Length: 595
Image (cartoon, rainbow, N blue to C red):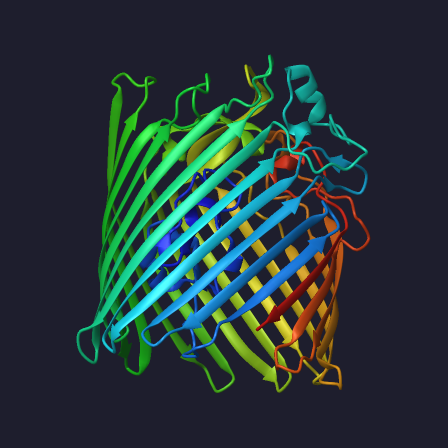
């Protein structure tokens, strides 16, 4: 699952930005966080009704009590787009406090397919963050965190077409319109510019040996501007200018492994004037109150985890498109979860989780009305959509079939009423911003089922073989077809060889990886603007070296090649596939060291 069914947690608070689609990642630099983890099951219910697909958590590790400055530096370059990056981190522990500083940037130009450059796909990014933690005593501490992120992204020129005739041609062309044979670092319209501020305060107090209280307060400010190709020298004037101001507050009481809490979240979206174009989203206020609890116990020696969440959400939407200037919508929703883990024997263990989630529609699903620039499509919401009701079952098995062989196998099944998704309408529409395909949010009763398999075989200390497979089956019960925009079957096989320590190296590892992506056949090709692309096979390679240094801090060098044979292909899950191929061969070189 993806999009509105995944929660991104940035330093303990939900990331809030203009993430109304899959055209751009959240406004986060993952290098500013020490670790990234995924939470599923009852524990995920704490973070919202959107967490049906899980929670991705980016957070810092505790700093060791060392009075010296420590840190790391990472730099690299990739050949496709000649994109370079740099990131540095500094940390220090004082007597009663810790401090960490992060900063980095990315600079790149046009990506290239095997046959042509993707014109105007350059990228710029800058980020910084700082965290200060003060320990008042052994039972109490508080923490301040601030981060800033900014990027500028070029939108592929061949996806923005001026008339219906050219759009129809573009959807069937092998080589897209406006493709160039030369590389450029420049970013011109159409383009996007985003910046994001996040500030967070955390207070934690240990009440006694088994209870502690935590208070979190977070503020976020997100501004997003989109620029179109305009006549009369007006391309520097944004066609979309949004500001989103968000607040998040949480109070939790933790008793051993049990957690009980209250959350309040507020978002205010403002369309800044002067664009001269109707906005994709209206001005709105979103207000959310939630109570949750996670309880862990044992039933006849079997560990069991229960989670429950009740959430009230209110939307105040301001738009001249409604009969009244302000439209109010409110939802009272509920989610519950139960899971357990156990062992069949010393070599095989399992995990079972059953959950129910009532997810209210998001603002974009209700009220989108206009061009979604990054995916070159017009999107229309439906204010009459009802909350999504989903029952999900997950079963995971881990086992060893021998001393050198480990297997992970998981299954999931979902039955959902009023499952919300974006579907192509078949219409091509001409607007003052150009000609674009039209998509509309709709609801259906659906069934989803899937499996993930991973096998690791390590016959010796030097050789390892990893095989994995992912498959998802979907059925739209309302329309009698497969569900659109679901990932096809894919497999990965990786063979690795490792050499231990030598006089010069602490490690040398190399490997080759084979990826296969099947054609998505479980969907009616007639309902989409282009049929699903054919299957494809990719080969990747890597080499990792760790050079010894006298101060015990290695220098790590990683060389990686993706799409080694420069295969031409299109990714079904990328809506830019309507217009162009995916980037071709890409060679990465990364250098990393600590101090």
